[in-house]
Every structure is written in C-alpha cells, then in structure tokens.
Image 1 (spheres, rainbow, N blue to C red):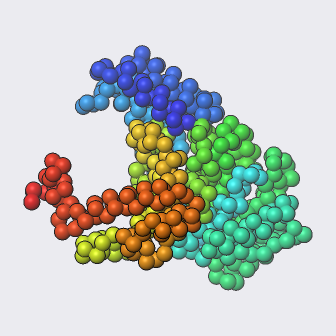
Image 2 (image 1 turned 90 degrees about the horizontal axis):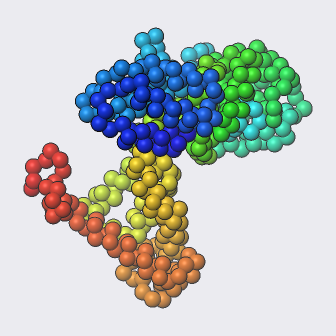
Image 3 (image 1 turned 45 degrees about the vertical axis):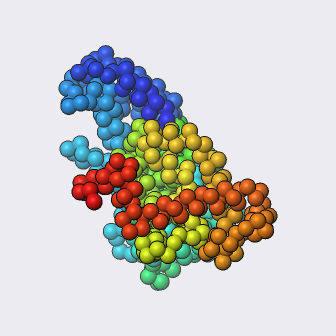
Length: 462
C-alpha cells in the first residue's frame, strides 16, 4: 500500500501545482487515486467508503495555506485521516498517543493471545514478553495452551528463552483450561508481574476453537485480549477479525509481518472492524522486532514520508554509546583508527538492521535514490569486508601496514575472496583513516571551511 499510495499522491501533487484552492474537481481527482490505491492494498470496501467520505468532507472548500498547493494540503488531510483510521481519537477528534499494554491490575496481569494458526501468535508472545521485560521492567511468565499442534509447546519454550522470560511447562495430554489455571496459580505463588497465555489456532475459524478460547477468557479474566493477525492476509484478515470480535471482548490488535507487507490493507481494515486499537506491530523476525504501534508514524510511512523517529530509535538502540565515546576519544588523542574500530562500525550497522533496514525508514524520495545504488550489492560488500577483517590476526588489525603480499594471500584464502578484494578493503580503510585524522584537533572545521560550509550552522567561522 505504501509505495502505491505514495506514487499516486506524488503524481497528483505535481499536476495540481499552481492551484490556489481545493475544489470539487481536484478533490475528486485525488480521491479517485486514493480509492484505487486502498482497494489495490486489499482494504475492505466499507472501510474505503468511510475513509473517502471523511477526507472529502474535511477537504472541500479548504483554503490553501502559505506555500502549500491543493495537492500538498490534501496529502496533509489524507495523512491525518489515515492516522485517525488506524489509531484512536478523543471526542475532540485529536489522535491519542500510542497505547501500550494496560497492566493496571493486581499482579499477575494476564494477557490472552488469540488468532489463527500461522498468524505469528507464538513468536509474538515471546516478543511481547521481551518488550515487557526490557521496556516495562516486568517479570514475565509464558505458557502454551495449544494442545493440538505438537511443536507449539516446544516452540514457545525456545522463543521464551530467547526473550529472557520464564516458561511454564504444559503437555498435549492436558486440557487448555487446566493448563491456564495451573500457570496462573504458579504465577501468583512466584510473584510474576505478567502471565502471557498462547492459545491454539486453527487453519480456519471453527466453533470448537471459539468455544475453547471463550472458556479460557472466562477462567483467566485477562486484562488484555490481543488479536494477532498477519498483515499480509489483506481481505481475509477482515473475516477473521469479525469472528474473533464476536467471540471475545478484544482489547487490542497485534499486526505481524508488517515489514513484509506490500499492500498493508489489514492495518486499516482490522482496526475498523474490531473497534480495538492496534497496539503492536511486528517489524522484523528478531526477538525485539515488535514496536508499539504509532498510527501517526505509520500513516507517514504509508504516504512515503518515511519514519525518521523509528530511524533515530534504531540508531540509538544499535549504537553502543560507550564504545562510540571511546572511539571519539581515541581519534581525538591521535591514537589512530585501526581495523578493530572499522570492524566495530560494521557490527554496529548490522545491529541496526543493515543498510536496507535503515533505508526502509527514510522518506520515499531519499529511499529511491539510495535504492538506485543497488543496496543488495552494498550489503554483500559489507559482509565480504567483515569476512576479510575476521580473517586477519589481532596484530594485523592493529597494524594494517604489516599486511604485505604473503599476508594478503593468506587473508584472502581465509575469507574465500580474491587478493584484489583485500586490497580494495585496505584502500577503503586508508581513506576512512585519513578522514579520521582530519577530524583530530579541529580538522573537521577546517575541512568544512574548505567545502564552503564555514562551520556548523549558527556557529561563527574559526
């Protein structure tokens, strides 16, 4: 949905340049593009109709402010309504901040996970546990009440360990109700803050599944009943959402596989159909790849505005500030920048999701330019560089000047590359080393002056 809607709106903004007012005609043009993009994204037809009606109502007759043309003004309205459709608004029509898990109850707070088989429930259970441990500092216990899928219990045990939470054992011979009550008793006696119950899924909705999850809900009285849905299901997600809404008092939605969703219609449809807020989005396969869903930011991504906030968060999460400080001090003191430091920079970038992970969060215009540089090849080059440095001895990394012909051949063989690749890496390293030397002792300012910058904005030239 993101790319399609962004492309259509960008074209329209260009064609509407120079018009001073939003009119019936230019609104109709834009809404036609928006309607087609939403339908192509597999958004449910009733949701599309309601969304288009709201945008039209807000847009008609709006005077264009300042330098904005009608196209840009309409994009602003579409952005606001997209965010309102996916998020929650107060009675005044203001978008509420993102909603995290409600833990305002006597511990343990019980979270019940619902959804079809294959929606990512078990993995999401572990990711949610990880989120509550790292972001909310809670003691978390997980349990599987899925007695039908043989590997489900073992899978939850594995991913729970990765998340750093504790797992309560269950067996396929037990009844789901008995498992849930035993886990709840254990959580109370061992002072857990949160108990997350992973329930059984089916390949399709059936009455047995709904009866079972209704019974679990009745005995556990969860503070949150989260509906987990695959964002790539599109129109099918609507039917599943309706069935679960009728069976359970859903308090929130978790959209999985949002990173792989080219259509994205589920985010709009499921929120509207269930009436429950989207609380989380699965954005990668990593155990910490779960984000509190921010409707405003997601609307920006859909419209091709990128998600700079997420980019900054990714950098903050991936960068080891202590290591960065040590490197800055090292460069400042004149100790030099060696291949150990170069390897550390590559590792930091990998922690942030690699080049492609960072580019996904850039505004579409910048991302397109970056994509033109063949990011797949760039990622392969980075991996090759890492392999070459790992083939060196600690002494060679500290003193690259020691690496002559014989050593180069040994390093190339160890990394499975040609000697030319080793030479290329060493040349790139020398260039970076040269840049680092220029940054020492005010060299950065001198470099910027030569480039015509005169220093940083707002600072007097030196």
